[in-house]
Amino acid sequence: MSAPGITATGVAADGGAAVSGAPGAVAVAAVDLGATSGRVMLGLVEDGRITLLPAHRFENRLEERDGHLSWDVGALWAEIRHGLTRASALAREQGLPGLSSIGVDSWAVDYGIVGPGGDLTGEVIAYRDHRTDGVADALAARVPRERQFALTGIAQQPFNTLYQLAAEDRLTDLPAGSGVLLVPDLVGLLLTGERRTERTNASTTGALLAAGDGWASELLDAAGVDPTLLAPLITPGEQLGTVLPGLARELGIGEVPVVAVGSHDTASAVLAVPAREEDAPVAFISSGTWSLIGLELRAPVLDEAAREAGFTNEGGADGTVRFLKNVSGMWLVSEAIRQWEEDGARVELEGLLAAAAHAPADRFRIDPTDPAFLAPGRMADRVRAAATVLSGDDRSPSTPAELVRCILESLAETYRDELTAACRLARAPLPLRLHVVGGGSRNALLNQLTADALGVEVVAGPMEATALGNVAVQARALGAIGPEPGGIRAVIRESAELEVFAPRSQ
Image (cartoon, rainbow, N blue to C red; front, side, top):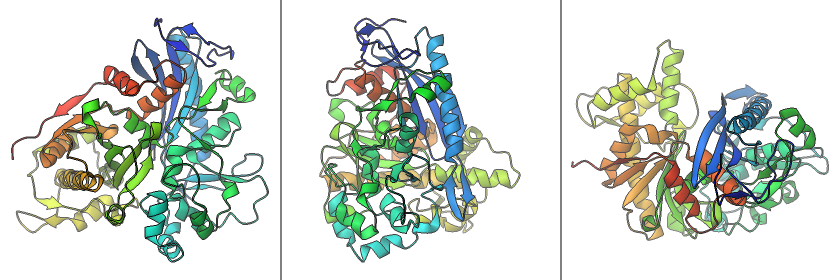
């Protein structure tokens, strides 16, 4: 493969040889960990386009461990290692010497505690665990919610890292040299031996100052957290380190650099929104387990009205701010399907969505933002019980198609309400179009319902936005994508298949 004009500036060959200034395609590995699944993708960057090849996909499930919902980090690490080996092999199959770099992103807020030697101490407890019940209220008695938001710009969700740390019973009597690392930074430690906290993910903790230039010591003190437990900050595009020699030999990938990307998966996904200059401010939904809907801004919105409306200001790549609201998205559908399958039914999502498209419209509604839908288990029963009847008889949704139609219509109306609120709070006009990225971009019914509810064009895709954003930051760090503003999104537009949904007349 060749790409005149594209050069890599990092370490690439499986033997660890430098390829600085060498023309040709760049091959990088994107480790992308979601709350229900993970993947390692090979990204090939050549001639102003990114091609993604799946190296390895795997499940990520919560488990009850020591009385808490936790993640099996050991299993995830084994899957990541296998994926990196496979990605390097795929690169060689494409005629390249191996990987030029690796980047890691994941879901937000969860962390591991590591000892002086980097060994994990105990479990990585999941954000859906009940240990934080009531913690936000207790901390608000020490630092008012208004003050917390003014400092960080982060909505006070019960699962925020700050509240998890306040509920943590493992921070006392830790040996010197121990630390707390968010999930992608924990993977970075395993790869390189280096401890850093990437800024976009750090912004979600509720403990980083809104300016992004340091930790909010006032809040850490109130939570009883020693700030020395937190690693120094690193910015997307900076090199974290190189793969440890022994690990590189084990995996056959070479001592390649590990580049900090937008390690909060939504930061990488929003970077891959294929927006144009006229779209500013960019309106987006990162649609997956969660629906994260909002605007990409240059500065946070820190007034009291934004806090009361439940909006949050998360750090994005290149100094941007994701002013957004979290809505429990396709989690509701996937958990309902899980219940039906546990009850013995065979459920295929595509067929279920087709049936929902033909179900009567505007019969039932729920509030997808209700905290009652946060925990897993018997979701179909909970949605059915919560559904408000709008028309027809007074029964609740009785078929899977009716229930899914209820969920999707409720989500579309919630998207409308939340995007309208975001524009009002940010003093921005309603956008010409809404970009939907991530796995949910494939849901044609939801996309059409959203276009209808908002009355604006919905641009769906790319589906693998998080992996594309991850790859793009690495490629720019290697010199394979230029540094000019909009350069990454121009490459994304050339690389992605997009579908446009125009609003239908009501």
